[in-house]
Image 1 (spheres, rainbow, N blue to C red):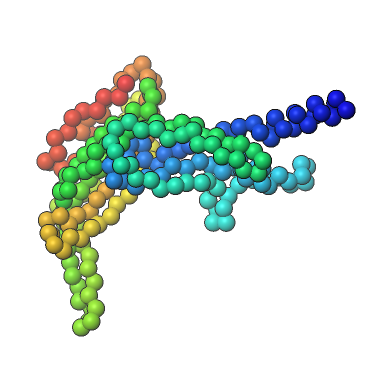
Image 2: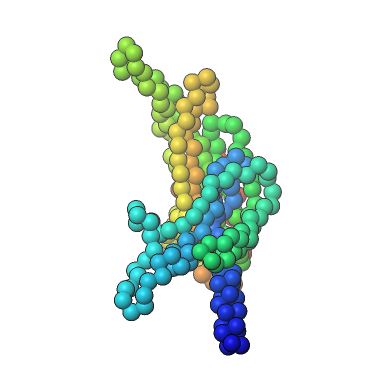
Length: 237
């Protein structure tokens, strides 16, 4: 009887054990009013649901019906600038307790309401890794096209004199540079055509290969920087 009681307590302690889930942020440093998401991989939960007999099946991966690795996420929009943190998030599922890590990040000020400009910032992660984020707006002209007497289409065309600024990802000494995310949209403004614009967002993950050697990114490390942009060298470590 004592043995059975001890075994029951052991099973309760195992089922109630908090399992860790890694929380991820879609944008290293979101701006005020910019949509971003937090998410975690659901593989741990999937393993609990699909607890198949050992020796009969081999699971290659856990994915949704469209082939994307399973995850849970929520879209957010920060209401205040400055330092923020989310987590730990804790919940119970299928008799198990799950807890995420704490994720800390800063929220930057929103971009000014202008139709033209480039903004480059560095977001440190640790002593060997930073994110380089480029926000850019290129002027566009609103365009109305009449298809017939009852139908018109409204769009915007980008001015041809300026191109999207980019960080060179190859041949940068002592660094591994990866594209980490990007987006773009063209917004017509039929009230004030000066504010019609194409907006670009690009994020790069920069990892030092040897942290004893500092890395300085000069304007030569970027492509298509407009002449009006006053570039300042970016020192990493």
